[in-house]
Image (cartoon, rainbow, N blue to C red; front, side, top):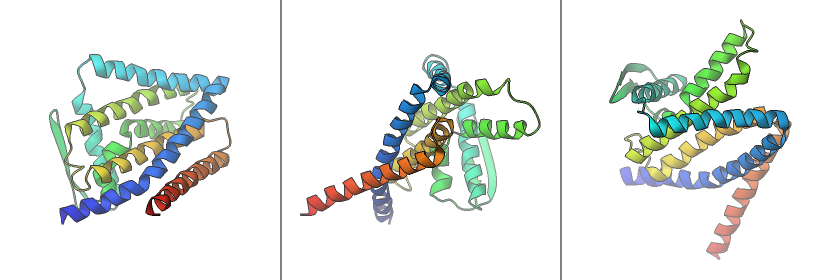
Length: 227
């Protein structure tokens, strides 16, 4: 039964590969567009500076595992709540944590690896605070903070996955890793599209065209192989 489950999700993972390639292609275009804009290019550099600072901290200072475990388990819990599942028990400790939910699915299981929890909290907190306060003094620092928290998510996700995670076992690596990559790329692309000087509908059309091109190429390669 486990074999057929892994085979099913591996098929889904393979079907996602052209989408990941299309997203990476769009991501490269948006980065080039941002870099060429004098104002937004500076914002991009600020974002990268925040990410670079976290990478240095991660490489040379003790890892704040409890902070990551908290984000990890809260991501499970939030995804469960959004999926309509009940969160029955949550435990966070220095050496690990756990969360018990009434039922699990792909989103609940893989949420901590797909979404940068602290970055989303930062954006939500800024949006709510902006309803009541003037945040003009804070907003220039927001890209730096988002780069810092985004790199936190990326570094700990790579560390956790390299160590092996029980969350991956129900779907297998070929099923889980493409979904994780897709979730991270969706968040990153959404942020870059909002930051980019171009028109949002134009960027969405660009993404759709890129996805179509990569799926068409994959289909043509498969058709040529069958012949």
